[in-house]
Image (tube, rainbow, N blue to C red):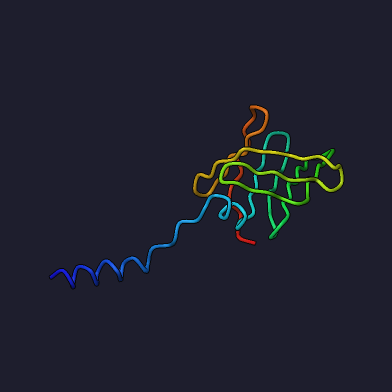
Length: 113
């Protein structure tokens, strides 16, 4: 009886997706959002770099460069301006909340890179 139960548990465990660290999951996907006055925000990653693009009708901002991630903080060293941009973040399934200076920006999962 115990061996049957053990076999059943082991066969089911192979169907369960392994839980990843939040930093790993954040880097696996592109995240995007549309906001007031037509503002579009996109966050994406390569192996070592992060890209944050903010666009609206009359202006745009791109932050890109070396990226460091912990399980609750995102840091991008922007190569063009020489500035560092730091965001707290929290994953909620198919969305991520970015936090900076008391403001929260919610982006939705678009797809994997």
